[in-house]
Image (cartoon, rainbow, N blue to C red; front, top):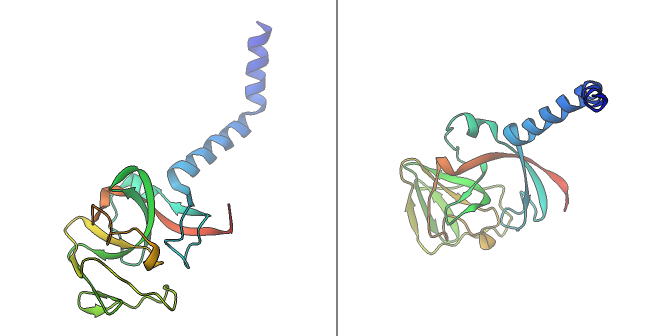
Length: 173
C-alpha cells in the first residue's frame, strides 16, 4: 500500500512538470514541426544540414490552398514516407514555362529575387499546366533540386502538404 501512495505523491508533486511536458509534446507535434534538411536543393534560402521549423496546425485542421512563393513541406509523391521541402511556383490553372534559363508564370517572367545570381532554370519539359487541386514546386537551387520538373509524379496535391516553412536555425547539424 505504501508503494501506491508514494507513486501518487510523486505524480502530485510533479504534476506541473507532467502537464508542461504534455503541452510541449502537443505543441511540437500538432502546431509546429521540425525537420532536418539534408540537401542543398533550397539554397541559398535554406542551407543543407539545417533544422527548419514549420507550421503544421492549419494542415491538420483544414485544407488550406498553397500560395505561390510559400515554402512547404509535403509528402514525396514518389516515396510516400519521405518528406520534401520546396517552394510553390504554380497553383491550379497556372501555366509554367521555361525559356532561355528563366521561369515564366502565365506568360510573365517570374521575378525570383530569392535565387542566386546564377539561378539558371532548366527543365526537360518546356511547359506545364497545373491541374485543379495540385501545385507545382521547385527548389531554389534550380540546378540541384529534384522537384516537379523531374519527379515521376509532376504535381503535388493539397492532401500531400504536411506543413509550411517558418524559419530555420542558423547552425548546421
